[in-house]
Length: 324
Image 1: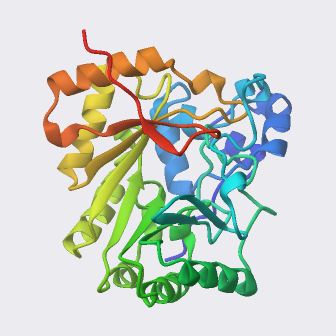
Image 2: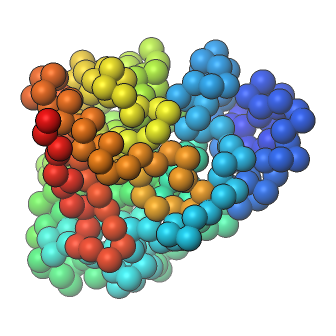
């Protein structure tokens, strides 16, 4: 069965009913600067949810993205300053971030790497990957490799298997971690061959990014179940987003949805200072109050760590919760 092509232009969005045709000219500067792609199945879900839904807000371009605040920067978490070789970030002593691909199946409108992902962006060649593997092999303090991007789960099963083979063969690597949107937003990509590639002697943790419970369609739930049934350990990451999940009822329902699908809540990120994302950003005080309320009312299984990642700091820092 052939998968319908993704929506990749404003004309595609208008034809699918996700934007009004008269908004194409208004949004053209946004998609010229920031990549656009929405899988066909997700586009149908967004159309059903409506233009003011949490799903539309996350994935359909907005004119608000044209506004860049002075404090917003193109590398908001400081990746470049900690990149010893192309495609690798070594910020923490015992782990590195590996970006094997620059592309994603869907481009979030709040992405902190939005200036660097998409068509024509960074992607590792065979020689560049060899340099990455050599660096990891030469640095015995590295215990964990985190695959990010782009979205590493868009790799074919063969390429993913080969990359994990190479990393697993490095003796001092004890843990592998993959951060991905694919299982919930493009679940058809998670084939039995992909799941087989994740099952190996060293643990491969899959961190699933979702921000609203409506992302868990029947297909997404089935995909996550297949991963859990195969023994792949699952964690979550979410971004605190204004108008998407910044109220107690929605955040509680999101965390309960993770747990119900055998995904342990892991990170809740403060929105990074990426260009054109101010309309998504809550204040730290608002986030502290919300997370305190979550802790006071929801099961311990439903508690992510609320974190801030700043370019001039040591990396992710837990944000203190404001208790009433």
